[in-house]
Length: 141
Image 1 (tube, one colour):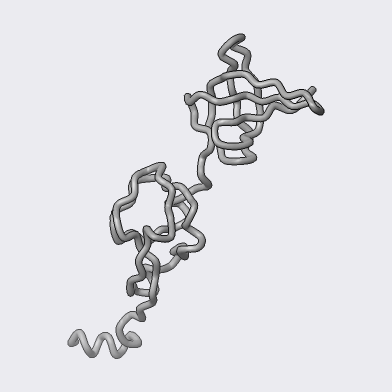
Image 2 (image 1 turned 60 degrees about the horizontal axis):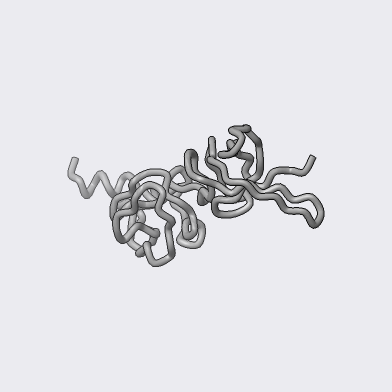
């Protein structure tokens, strides 16, 4: 059976759709921006699960991604504002009183995630919430 006959019997050639792909290599941990993407024709099967530019922009790569890669949900995560082993500012707020201390993150997380930190001065381990880049908020007792 010829290739063309097989295509005709199977419903013709695969249908192509426009999908966002990376225009250049992206390293693990890099934040994706809308300018990192171009639009290309890909088969419907290959485009399955692809994120749109608006969904992927602002996310952080979970692995190294090559140019031409279709970005899927497993390739990105919410940007990590606190990373394991990095210095953090530990902040305790109670009314108008704000106490800050230097510390180190024992786990990483995005805004609103629970993380564990250790204070530099007392080596005390605390659980807190990521409040911003390098800032962990501890709930007042």
